[in-house]
Image 1 (spheres, helix red, strand yellow):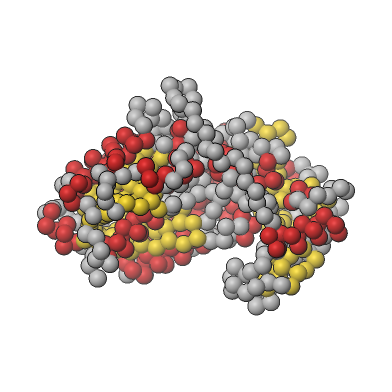
Image 2 (tube, rainbow over the protein chains, first blue to last red):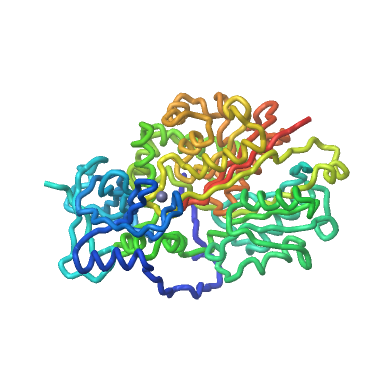
Length: 155
Length: 388
Ligand SMILES: [Zn+2]
């Protein structure tokens, strides 16, 4: 009753592609700081705005609230708590994900912007807001956000 | 400064498929209806044209170059707003307010059925370094962010999943009285629950399906409109828009973009007590919880109150607040940038007394609110009114 055909592929049509598949994205000054610290020291760093008393994770070179330049970096540690979460059951093709994938906003301290990442080593029904978690890092790191495999519950 | 009125509106029906016309013919259909409604000839009377579009939705590079002919705009001032239909209306409003132009046309559309990689285009709107890689490995649908934001909103306000499911039931039912809406259905809470979690706590049938369609607005300076028509005029009394942080992780739980956009629009329109002053309300509901969040952001309810209003039946044609009588995006379909104009269209029809079975008696003031959708926090608010 609620299903409709939403894509035109079964009807007479002409195929075209947007020639926009390949881009090169720079990490930037703040990104360099973040990814080098993650790769070489296994640290998650943020940038602190003293005016707003707010720390951005990942770091940026400016504060989005007061527009100050941010030069003070902090090691956030690897522990935090879940601010919000979701358990995703579908992939981009509309197929069910088995097992589902869990995502969360993770706060690494008071007055910080949370980090978006995945949760692991926990059953979906056990996840809750406020859950204490810690980052699980890859042993061999390349300077990517996926050097953090996921966050797992603190035992 | 001169006042701005809606001289005419036109729309195609909204449907999940439109293989019988191409995208230009879809726009032409809506334009012809709008010009007839406004009693104007676009080649003679219209000073400026605006479309609202985004290259990636359209499958064209530099899409704005492809829009003049189907609107009657060849050799005229023409521009594309890379934003939603209300942002397009805002530009038209300013073009008329300044005195530069007298009659301005705004068009927005969706031909999303022909976009075979919709999910990939949405994913490409995520930050490529910090956000995209997280879902790329297992090809996760980018709507997972809606689940995260719903969880954030429920936790912050105490709104329940059942209250959100009520919205999905009500808007699909309401769409049955809107002849333009393709997704009307008489279903109950059990169907919503049975559809299961898509991105918990968001359920599958709390997500709007997509639709094709085109909507055209003709705006005019009041004194020009008076020369053309004797019909009561609908005034655009105020319009505002705002963007939150683009970072998914820095987003507020209370749709701050909508709150700010409403403040701008309300100030221009002299709205100080929206719940008492506004008769008809159209807010964005691509995900059912967004309707509740947006009602609170627009000042129709306190944080956490909108869900109770939904559950108690206060948000329908017979309720205290006349919300999404068009069926909203859940009933009309997600029309991309045109969803914003669909909300404005409903308000205009209501204020003119042309809303048929879902007409609110004596509707005088209405508000339309848009949200451009995931993963971003941009939205607009427009206040319309009858003055006669
Ligand atoms: Zn600051």
